[in-house]
Amino acid sequence: MIAVAGDLHIHTALSPCAEDVMTPGAIVQAAVEAGLDLIAICDHNSADNAAAVQAAAQHHADNRLLVLSGIEITTSEEVHLIGVFPETEAAMRVGAQVRSTLPALSGAPRLDGNQWIMNAEGEKIARETQMLSMASGFPLADAVAMVRDHGGLAIAAHVDRPSFSVTSQLGFFPDNLRFDALEISAAGSREGRQERFTHLGMPLITASDAHCPEEIGACRTLFAMKSPDFESLAEALRCDPREGRCVIA
Image (cartoon, rainbow, N blue to C red; front, side, top):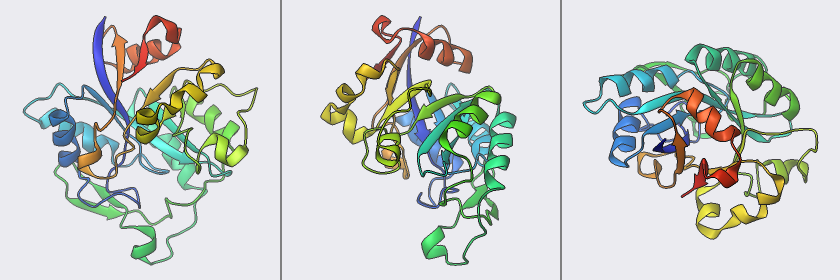
């Protein structure tokens, strides 16, 4: 086993709430400088910039960084759900399904953000025309099933926060719904909020939810993995947390 430092929740300039400086190259550079081995690109309701970040990582002088394609789905209940996928094509298919349920942009960038789709060099290719900040048409259970149907890991985002979390939006954890992991926010990890969720018996991770380069790697999860790849990550999350395979650090 090797220790893999991962940050599984990073936004690019495509997310309406992220800074425009969150270009593929800037994200990779910040991740490398932070000593990360693994990151996942999880923009709001879209996966359109994930491939560009992967390409930027491959072209970086230190190209050991593994970049996984993901998405942060806003469900119809306004719960944030992270999907992390073994292949970019799977993430893109999920993104297309989510996008089809979103309304068009209002035309007010100050409200909707610029939502830039970029290439690996950080050049702006297009601006997303649907409102990525809005709730999709998928209820939480359907969103989890969609992620799994495409081979992905379903992670409940920032479960300790008072908004956009399972607990804040539903008021409870559904008994019939199991996540591959529960994400504790950066602030929550520092304050020990993970203790509130250990009784649920699901792996706990933490991630930066970075919207600017300085936040990348501000907190990370250390995984004991056979190798730095998706399958080893999935295996780590399937193991009993008491075995130390998935440890908030």
